[in-house]
Length: 132
Image (tube, rainbow, N blue to C red; front, side, top):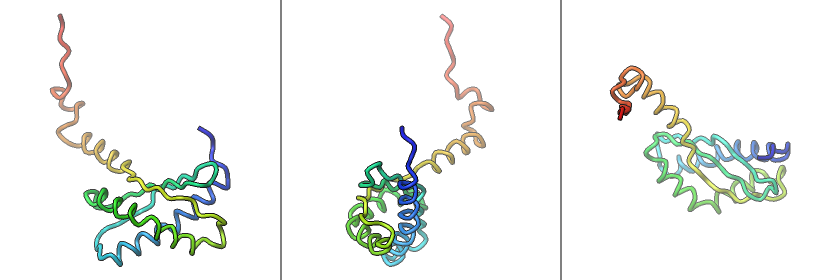
């Protein structure tokens, strides 16, 4: 995989900063209290036509439902972003939204290490190798 160009990184950071505002404002206006949406990463393609946006949503169980809602409102989100970034970007890339589940993955590992399902402390969890 190629290293990101400075231009890709700059566009990604501009989009990330403004997307946080747009999405959090939309969530609040939509009556979603106690929901935290953060933009963990934005990756822009080499031709600058597509921006892949990775979202972390708390609480986790709201994630799939919220991402679906965000995807169905991509056009208005893109329009709002275009208004905010018109002095920095000539063309607004298409937006694709994904759930970033890396925090959940880390949390599961931590839980495994602390809890009863730790194979180091409880070797009975490991499959026994049978000698034939």
